[in-house]
Length: 171
View 1 (cartoon, rainbow, N blue to C red):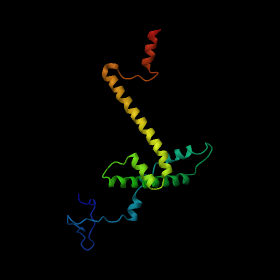
View 2 (view 1 turned 135 degrees about the horizontal axis):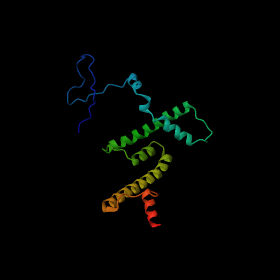
View 3 (view 1 turned 90 degrees about the vertical axis):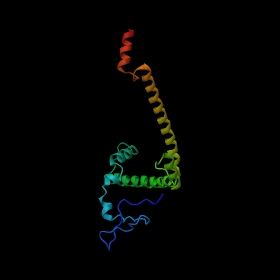
View 4 (view 1 turned 180 degrees about the vertical axis):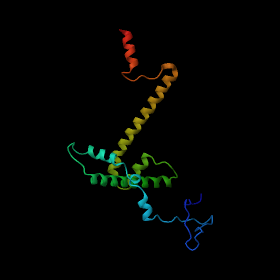
């Protein structure tokens, strides 16, 4: 497979209408991103939502503690950068392996590679628990669907009105 070509070709300064590297065999080099273009990205597009960061921070301190706005913003930027750092390493691994989807194991690998082994160990436990919950959830959904298809009707939730009606009939 040939090299990927950028969407916007570079312009030839000496020929305003011409494109640099227009031949099909010559790779086109993308123009560098300017500071103005970087500044055009909105903060909300680059960072995690401040409300989520704030909620997590509040959970880590005593209920009487207050967190300054600049502290929340600082953590918001740091956490967003950390996630980008780990994700880019995981994406690089996937690209080398010719895969398009980054999985949990890729994130764990990236964290270990980048020196965050202590965090990776904790996340392995959470990933295993998450997978267990997902398997159980899928099993329950399939089980309920089969029950419904076999004429059992929709599954009733505990304490539902259907349970009340049946208990009155017994009296």
